[in-house]
Image: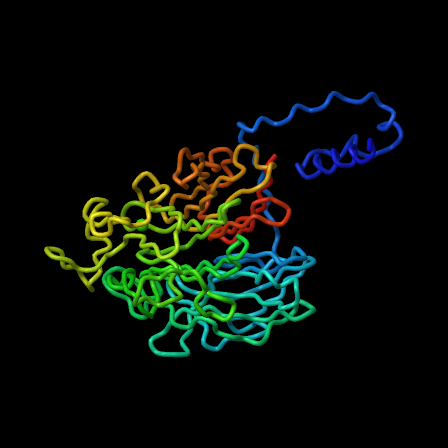
Length: 422
Ligand SMILES: [Ca+2]
């Protein structure tokens, strides 16, 4: 038992980046007087954060999302080139633009849009080898965003069997008074984690189209979809009568983060506000997020989009006057809009007081925010991780907790970080 204890202590020290001196395991160490046990970390203390900048062969240009395979390999998307795998120190371009192993001739990038989310099937390790990406396609007119399923080869070096499982997600085909084509595409995809909820959640955006968020039918925008691995409506979505059965929630603006609370598995989204009020919101099946930016009496807007026409009172991100049962946000970024995008729950005792808290990446605000939530999912306190470690200040695009329990981050500037708590 003593040897096991010694090895475990060394492993912890190595994992925390500490010197390995004294962890050699030789006889001298074994015969030394037993040190006093280290005090247990106080659960009230925040972790110390160490940032490691990781190298990706070939570098990254506008990376958007990442996912881990069961063997620890990493899938990474880049907005204009596509999907790559990083495995054993090598990088292979798998799917997307020219130069990838499988070229998608209908794929393109424009404005905010391109290769966005990536997800790994929960049964990948059981043999189906499915991975999924979210991307715009010009295979039909008007252009749409799609969720594409691919099968990764046994040698991890190629993909095939492309199957477009959702092909009618709204894409902003033409620029208007509020921004260029490709704006507000959403695009995060994640599988649920709770038992019985291994379905794919797909976040979408409002395209600067006032009618989309409250629209019950395709094209699907301003929604969170929940589908099977074949793209069919998942059971239990509880979409209102007359709504497309793939809709899990609606009435959103531009959802670019979704995360599942440890324990309950409840999904929480993070989305960009207009000129105010980024939101984090716990979702309930069939819920309405309360965003409705279309024209209304005494308010007529360019291109029928009133999203920027008001303030938190006149054009709220959650309009409880129009929709009394709207989903209530956990947090609204103190009423300001700073490009709140990805989110992930931190899980594990290595995160100390942050175990179970929600990490939220903020692009314009260039920071990593940590939200403490009560039982109902409402924020009770916030901590800025970028203040704990100033090197974490950047336009944060993707957040994933790795199989090693550390937090992996992609930045718009093209860096991949591993954040190690201790
Ligand atoms: Ca809302």
